[in-house]
Image 1 (tube, helix red, strand yellow):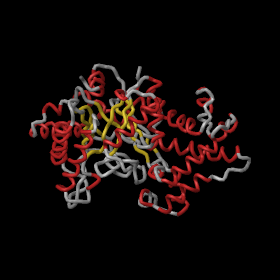
Image 2 (image 1 turned 135 degrees about the vertical axis):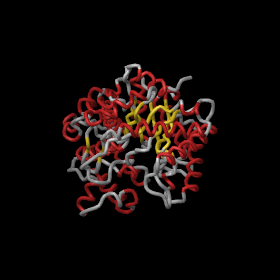
Image 3 (image 1 turned 30 degrees about the vertical axis):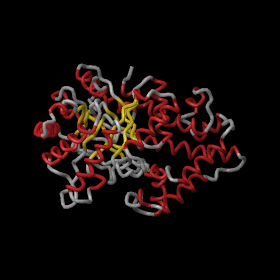
Image 4 (image 1 turned 180 degrees about the vertical axis):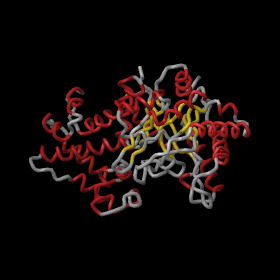
Length: 423
């Protein structure tokens, strides 16, 4: 049976310009919102995990690929979404988690990781071997990258079941989670680099006897000139990526995969799909929307209790992050006030790494309990969640905290769904 993403890629070149949203998150509320959204609109749900989130050692979520699969499927069962309509993807699969080790050791660990993803039924695998390991340059030559990608693909082919995976390749991969530097320029992938990337990977796969697997390459990751940082976003300008867009016509059956699409305007997301960037990856924007909703609901709960907002949830998250700066300390530099603002409100949303902590989960559970059984007046929704007021009322007046938080996430997903042009 033809993989749905392979089918989409082939149809794209026949003139059916549709795309798909790739939800890159491990937050249970985000996953639930995404699956409910797909259920209500009768869509496929593409859910992806990165090599740092999920791997054979547990990643920062503590989940192996099999654990993540079970995690997503359990949520699907809870919300009444068919498991067979879920496509699981593995993102940035390569030596990145172990890049501070010698290359051969890191690659062996990457092989173990991709084998675990393939065995767990992840059917969309992004082969990302572009980074250097100990003693190597930060960016590797194309031939080395392609040889290592083929090496990982060979392991995936042996480890998967009867249903063979599709692959995404590409050496120009944006920084996961947003840029660290000022957004004063952005280098768009050159059109001739696309052809080089494709050809060098094709040769590497052929040399490894993986011609049939290479036929299942569906997309290349390239840089279309978009990015977001702490407090800025570079919006898509299709005229600047015109040559890159045109290059796709020479690669029948392939799409571009667009990373860092978070915070793009709706019309720009549509332009990306029309330009061939049909796989739109989104992650931080979804947990950013969740955090906005939770902070607003915390203030609303205070008002419903009859006193001024005390921002207790924000205080709790501040304590958690200051006590353990591992996920933000090297990213948010500058004056203390700047760091404080970025910890909570940065587009890069590094606060997302802290929601799984026990103290944060308890704080959110307390918030949900405080709102349980209480009607939230439309006037408060208008004050604290003005973009969601109409949606909340149209959703049948759902006023429990979790439902409203999901509405915030679904509003973002709606922009992507409209851009993807799904029927």
